[in-house]
Each structure stands twice: as C-alpha cells, then as structure tokens.
Image (tube, rainbow, N blue to C red; front, side):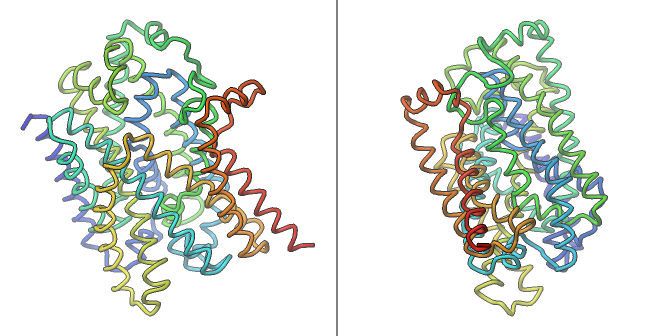
Length: 473
C-alpha cells in the first residue's frame, strides 16, 4: 500500500466517523430528508457547493480542458448559472410551498400539482438518471485510487462505494451537510495549491494558453462534443435548478433569506472554482503531452501525481476524492428519499410510520450504492455517465416543475405529454447528431451549437404549453 493510498483510506474513515457522529441525533424522517428544515446560509453554502463539485467538475473538466482548452470552463460555469437560478428564482417559490404544505421531496410537489401518475413517472426517470451520475462519481474516485495506489478498477470502485454510502446512511442530509464542510475545505485547498503551481511550472500563462491549439472560450473546437463551449448551458443549467437532490436540499433552508444567500453564494463560488480544473488541464497539456493518447479521466490524477510536489499532490488528490464523494452523497440523497417517499409510502405502504420511512430510506441508500457500483462498469467514462443524467433530468422535469410553479392549471396531461415528448426528442436528436452529415448540415446554417438537450428542452416546453392552450380553449 502506498503512503498516498493509506492517506486517502484514512481520510475516508474520518469522513464516515464524522457522519456517524452527526447521524446519531437523527430520529425523524424530516431530519434525514430535509435536515429538520433548519439549515442556515453557511451550511447551505457548503453542502450545495460540495455537492456540485464532483467527478464531472474535476476529473471530467480537467480532461476536457486538456483536449479542448478554455471552453471547458462552461461545464462548471453553466452549473453555476443554474445554481443562481435556483437561488433567486425557483428556490424561494418552491421552498414557500414546501414549508406550507410539508413537502419532503420533489415527488410530493409533483403529486400535489399533477397527481400520482406524474409523481411515479418522474420517480422512475429520476432513478434511472441518478444511478448514472452515481456511477460517474464512482468512476472518478476509482480513477484516483488506481493512479495513487495501483488498485484494480473493481477494488477502487468498491472502496469508493463503501466510503460514499457509509456516512450518508448514518444521518442523511444532516450528516451530509456537516461532512460537506470538511470536504469543501479540502477541495478548495487542494485546487488552490495545485493550479498556480502547475501554471508556474509550465512557464506562465502564455504557454498554458497556447498548449491547446485552436481552442477558444466560447464555442470550443469540437462540434457535437457536449461539455465544451457555451451550448453546455442547455445541458447543465437546467439540471442544477431542477435536480431533485438539489431542490430538496433547498427545502432544508430555515428561511428564504438563508436560501438566497447560501445557494446564491455557492453558485458564484462554483463559477470561480471552474477556473481551477481548466488551468490544471491546460497546464497538464503543456507539461505532459503524452497523456493525449490515454483516457481523459486519467489526466487529472496523472498530473497531480507527477506534476507537483508530493505533499501538494496528496492534498489535491484528496480534494478530488472528496469531490466525488460529496457529489455521490447528493445522489444517494435523491435516490433514498425518492425511493422511500415516492415508491414505498406512495405505493407499497401508504400507512408507513415515520420510523418505517426512515428505516426504508437507509436500506434504499445501501441498495442504491450497490446498483451504482455495478453500473460503473457499464459506462466507459465520467462524461458519458453524467451526460446521460443531466440530459434526461432536464427534458423530464423542466416543464413539470416550472409549469407546476407558474402554470399549474395545465394539468396532468400537459405534464405527462411534456415528459414523453422531451424524452423522445432527446434520444432522437442524440442519434441524429452522431451523423457527420447532420453536423455538417447544421454547421452550414450556423446551428452547430444545437445540442440534443436543447432540442429536448424546447419540444418538451412546447408540448406543455400546447396542452395548456388547448385546455384553456
């Protein structure tokens, strides 16, 4: 066992211990689901920012920056924009409803607005998409453990799953919120040390900016590659103000003021943090051009192991590992609360007591961890896993959540139509955009920016509005 692998394992045990210590106070489902609705701006800031910095924000963005340059900023930048929309537009409105009507999950809101059919369909889709993003976090954490300890992908994934699941099961959102404070400190410290050191070692900003030929900040250099350039807004921003895991975190705010401050500051901080992985990726291209032939997910671990002093690399790799775990607990939160509230109490045992609901949520979290472990071997990269989640989530929930808040009289049929049309449009567009001829046709008409997510979001919204107009007439 290498010293760095031992350090990461010890760090994981420490996180589990903190989570278990906080979790011993959790006795009610409301504590587990929404932290007792008592989180102030500080805890909201740390738990949102830590949850939003994961494998996609670190391992994936560094790989994108290594190959595509500055345009990789838009992955995290778009997520920050979505977080600001949650803080100042969606969050306050849905928090007010949740506090007044006792919502614990997004499913509660959807059933209240549109009925049980919409709640069930949304829960099924959330589960499918969420398992993909959980698998993405496992892939990212496993990549770190493989690089620093030489462990096999299976062993690395297993270690990551155990660490990710253990502290969350203890206390749900309450444990996660406090553990996220520790993780966030490690994440910020690691990237703040590593990024400027790698830039200096590369010879300064000029060589770093020239390391990726033809790159640009706006559109990027890879039409059809999601996560590059400003079209990423259509993929990422909706997911960060619609994700049930994040919306339910907003339910935990003690009041609207705390929500706006905590979540809003986390969105701004995420947009600033976005510079770190991009700088590391481009500096890595300047220092280690030989990595271009290897997997993109290995760029960040390789650069941190070989490009900076051992101590700095150790802190930075602990930061990456923290990022994956903190995002994974957000997914487990989404899966366990949805499973317990939407499936178990909604359909299996409507008369379940609070103690039964809490026990089932913990059991589901453990089962979801196991399913995510298996799914990690299906996806070939972090970006592939996360792309599935963000795309499906956006086209499924955009119209029902916004419609439920601002145009609820459209009714159940409008919500179901929007979800169905959005999914069909998304997968159809994804197939079409794999065709080089289709990409060339769009480019010739100035539409190279068009993504499958944009098509799905647009047609889903039109379907909801169309049914609403028909009902009104």
